[in-house]
Image 1: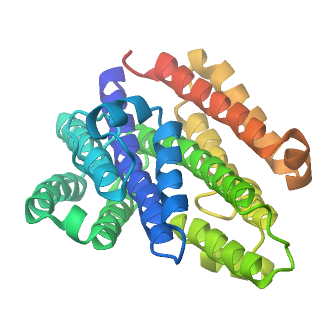
Image 2: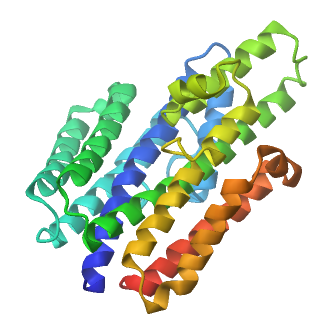
Length: 321
């Protein structure tokens, strides 16, 4: 396969996944703002999201203080923000157009329709007037795109590069979301003066916080099946990092990266496959207690560096630089 074609397929999938993950991130911050007494915490969460994406200086230059409406304008509608949903869906559609001969008719029609409907929804003001409904639409269009890909694409190299893009982006996003949410609750504990864990107020706050995290990653029902117990931060982290059967977990994503690399591997990609396999093996035998010993934030920072290294190597081995 031509490297330029592989590049477009890979980035088409990454941008589609990125739009969905951005919608999930903003939506959880907005949901948090609806809880009693959580307005300040929600704004801090949205600020943390901008910080993780290294977009805070650009945002502040345009909008100043962090508030939900301005964040939506910046992360959804801003054509100059490369991480906005506008840019992600536009770039996904343009990459799909460049490789129409390599994808099915259903895939192209889905990508094109998503972009056209997005423009219509923006004209109608849905992102600002009904953000929850809009973010649900973004997620459902992403689900539809993946479903049509799996249901109609021949499983050749083109399919594998699409899947590589999806899981590299998803693993990165899941790691960032976990890091952001655990930092959020640490900051809230500091502000509240560390409520007594036996205090009913503490238990209620913990439940709603972790429930929102799980729902943001479509993991609430899975958590109930696996643990059948009270929601706790350590178990949430275990499910979203180490459980290979959880579709959006980091372990599941890395396993998919390894499998798809094996199908497109060439003489130049041996080191990339070795590093991906090493990361998968580490996640397979790691425990949440060992992660806690290193410090969750520090461990996730290293993981993000490893994922970035894999992304760079994939581009060097297969794609147009």
